[in-house]
Image (cartoon, rainbow, N blue to C red):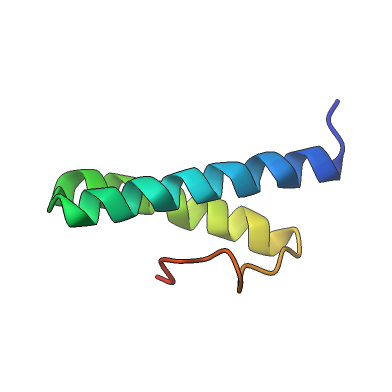
Length: 63
């Protein structure tokens, strides 16, 4: 069973990937893709916040 550190690391990596894809979707004006990714973004943000992760430095979208 993974420890909290591993879970946080994986969630942070996924959070960063989702943000990258959101920024690309925004540039390409892919509204549906952006909105779908936004759901993942919000879920990951909630998980990370609940685990006490400070997202100030890594949250580039800030929605």
